[in-house]
Length: 605
Image (tube, rainbow, N blue to C red; front, side, top):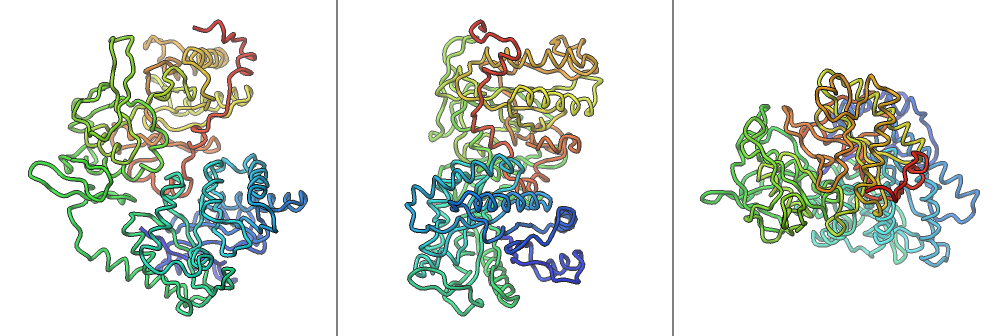
């Protein structure tokens, strides 16, 4: 629930292995590299240190130089600030660090609206360079009244930029509120605001700083040795525990005794809370260390979900669902843990249920119509069916409880529509499903994906890949919501035929299964109303419980099918966040690509 560490640099003369082993021996599970004054490390050093930290399970972050702020109006200085942040984020990528912390900057007597526009221009230019390298820019809450950096400021910017997320400096919040963090309820109020105003995947885990602090009516004066001020960590620990948050807490105290004292209090309070009697039992089997493990109370015939807003009944939690021994309760816990990241990709979309009520080795079936016994709080999506006639009422998933209900129904995988309920004829992204036929290899899939990337780049379109979770790769092209299904399908079909013409030994568009042997089939038919494909982060019904996982194009040559499962995906998500978040932003039109491909959108039907 809380991963604790401190900020600094390894002392000179100590080997990295010795330093990292020392962190573990002292109970530290995180370390923030303080590149606050200069860049003492180059990329090779960062890469080496990052690999050693990852081998030991130590979570890394980086603090950017203090001068690299967002509110600078002088363009030359702003350019230097952007360059420093760009370099810091690239170093963080080498380290495998998930977040780079920076300050927003001084108000300098300017109106907040003007400063927000200045910061937007800054971030617009920074995003071009590092917005999609998988490192978050953690905007730190301010401790001074003359600085930008309220949670409101940060939440607004985070809503506009996918790579921006919050870093809560508890000492700063305490100082600027005149000592406002004294009780569990005080911390709960801040955590509640964070949960309400930030995308779930940006705060799972939530990156935070902690130290004791001296302050006056204008806010922070300086850090204090722990115990000399009036900020204490115990209420934070309890609030975190009660709210079910995952936190990374980095001590910014100046002395090791303070780091140790804060860590000792965190451990003691967590131990005390974990020993306290809890109602019910864990939903999961215990075979996997899920970030979130819901609890349920046993009733006469089922289990009642505890500590969630919407009521839910669960059943057969211990039923094996995978040959590996993973249970139905494990599947429920997986989707509960992924809710913050997955729900944005599902909300507002009809879902086809792929049900395996007795596990993946038993009978399975697809179900479009809601069964009728779904929870009363679950919105349905009524959509006319030209094939069956009448209306089909699909289930939807706009909250964590919805995902847990689907898993309880045996929905190992989740299949959302490619369009939203409010505009079912408008496709939100083009999908290239690279499906290896019998006799083909993974290397062929990788080769075809690389060719597709080159083609889309040439057409001026950004694309985002994910493993299918089975044997193939899915490539998404986010679109502005103005493209109907036939238009998108024609585009995908034309690109697919070009690839097949250029590489006939590896690529086919032939729908006849015998003719696909030894090739990768590009299925343009996935781009039609009602067709669905396994969602990003969906579990797939295969041994090991693999997950359809986004990856960077730069990783294409190194990934393998099945690399990430419900047991192994968590460290990747902690370090990279949601690599598929840009897909939700849309922002692209096919007009120019259609001109290049000689497609007349007006003639498409």
